[in-house]
Amino acid sequence: MTETTDRRSLVVKTTSGTDRPEAANQALTVAASAVAAGVDVSLWLTGDAAWFGVPGRADELALEHAAPAAELLEAVLAAGTVTVCSQCAARREIGPEDVLDGVRIAGAPVFVEESLRPGAQALVY
Image (tube, rainbow, N blue to C red; front, side, top):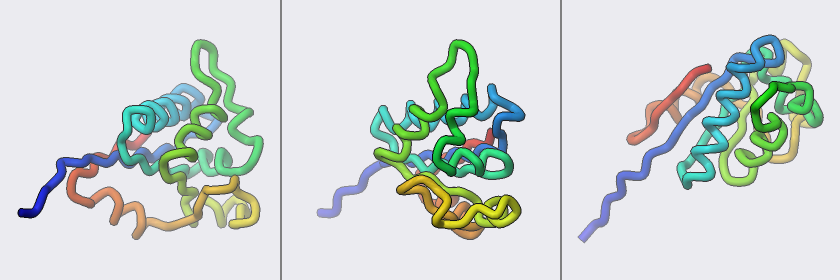
């Protein structure tokens, strides 16, 4: 007898950086909350959010009445996947040696594959 699971996954994509702090922090908060709930999470940092994949840059996102962005990102890195968009990284001259330990750089085909997996839910901020 084969057991099936209804395991869901969450793909969170944020295009917002310090230019849109509320949207950026919301994406990080949702991703970290899902990780805390035991959900498989893949967080995509695109556009200006790509900078959050670089050490120290998430500290630049300060938002009143919100958890620190660096702590939220750390929570996702501890139990989920964090990806910087390859084109976004190239435009900002961010290479694999520039990102936080555990952060990968990947492109749209990987995002599409993750988003279309059975049971996946994608959110874009």
